[in-house]
Each structure stands twice: as structure tokens, then as C-alpha cells.
Image (cartoon, rainbow, N blue to C red; front, top):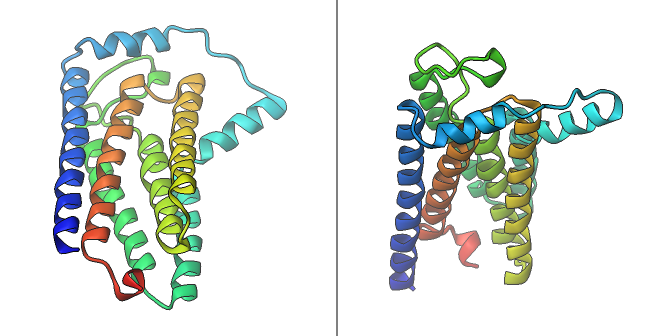
Length: 219
């Protein structure tokens, strides 16, 4: 059992490190205006639709799925329900750790890099902006991923339903990123980097939780 957990941890650490390395590569290219900024420019120069009425309302609500307030409240509700149901603080502690680590890591990079948003018409780093990496993309993959993991971990769902949950989280993250491109609120590299960084944190936190199982998880 312990040997299996060690093997799973090593594999997860490799995946987490690979995703973080991808984030660093994208960051290097973005800061130095490498090839990925050509993709940024492509999406920036597209004709962005003028949204109004129900279409604007619907698109904005999809965009809200990437907000920390929305995903954080959803995580809190799920964590509290599971904690009460199984009489353990583990889900609340995990949710708290996820939310704090997201804000520290993603927020730290945002402040350090200070990239401007595309709506300002300039692509500058160190200008006091908060565009890179995208918090919406990181929230979508990381916080909603933790929610799906908590449900999978405690609800005893089979692997098929677990894969469906993973697919749903991936689809939600892609939707949030697509909406951001439509609304021109983020550069493409912001979103891609946000997914990589959020994915790295997600894999790492799940690996830690599975390596140190609580009594409620073992039984």
C-alpha cells in the first residue's frame, strides 16, 4: 500500500513539474515576445463581437465561472457538505489550502510580472497590470478540479464517472478561456499559462492528499 502511494506520488510530482516547466517556458516566451506572442496578436486582431442583451448576459455568466468568488463559494459549499457527511475536517482543510495556494502562487506571478490587458491596446510587462497569468483560467482548472476531486474521493463513484468529472472540468476551463478570448479580456498566453499553472497546482495538491490519507478516506 505504501509502495503504491510512493509510486503514485513520484508520477504525480513528474506531471506537476512538467506542467510548471511548461508554464515557465510560456512565461519566458511572453516576457521576451517570443513565438507565442504571435498567437496573442492573432486573437487580439480578430473582430471581437459587440455583445448585448441575452447573449451578453449568457457570455458574462460563463465568464463568471472563472471568478474566485464563484468557484470559491462552490468549493466551500461542497467541502462543508462532505465534511459534515463524513464527519471529517479534511475536505475543508483541502479546500482552504487550495484557495490559499491559488491566491499566493497565481497572485504572486501577477504582481511580479505586471502585464497589461489586451483591451488597453498595449502588451507590456512590468506596467502594473494583472493580466498574466490568467486567474480565470487557473481558477477554472484548479478550484473546479478540486471540487470534482472531493466528490470523486468521498462519493465512491466509479472510474467512468470520475473521468466524466475530469472531462467536465476540462470543458469548463476551455469554455472560460474561449469566453475570455471572445471578450478580449486576456491574451492567449495569459490563458494558456493560467491553465498550466493551475493544472500543476491541482496535480500536486491531489498527490499530497492521496499520499497522506485520513482515516475517513481509508475507510
